[in-house]
Length: 332
Image (cartoon, rainbow, N blue to C red):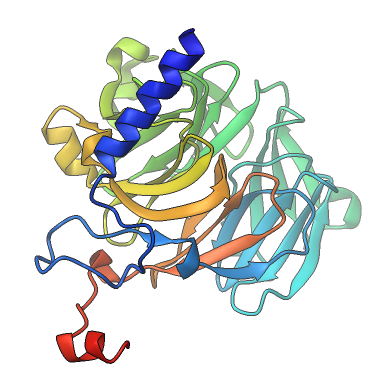
């Protein structure tokens, strides 16, 4: 009975939120007002980049490549983000949801929260083989998301513990916030606001706090403020180059990419799912993971453990010129 009521509620909410979206048409059909909510891109707009890695999970775009962590063979691959050409980068990483790639003189280094091994791992292929993968921290409780701070340290979300911890490059760990509901994605904007996704709470879908608030001691869920509520199974968060916060969530079993203006949501005391702008309405199985947006507004994503990696070009500010009447008449 409870399950039936829940499913009916989801369907009603879905029809209310997306009543004005025509999923049978391409995203080029926009409203005349450029500031209006754009019609989302669909699966038809997405292009397949790669389908030859085994159970991919976390994914990072860096300098023209996608670094893809695969749970199927405990390997991180490097995939050319234009051609899809794939090469093994390093093995021994079991299950990664988010990670950070940094430039070094010889080649990039990687900071990896390994969800399955409960470790925070540093990868440097310029070192001797035995030292290329070093566990900086062990005993973490299902580390999921990661974001870098200006001082070179990191914030990492712990899925099972419901916490955000601060980790230095030397491996010092300090709990910053407690009381989350299975925290997944974490993002930070240029003003120092931290955004955290609660995967198992629709009421607390995405919350925020300012980095300076945690300098005076550990924060709790009572200190968190609502950014967005009403989303199902939120996973990745990423700040786009346009200043919007993009996130992956579910509508039933379908994976959706949405966005909000975080400043507007903070100032109004929080947004609801009615305020979310759907950006990509995929036909991929939720949950979506590996969400990345490049400086030129290419979006990469895939279903968790699904072999196919897709990309789509986002228009600047998600506005597209409306075809002329003559072009429509000619079937263009």
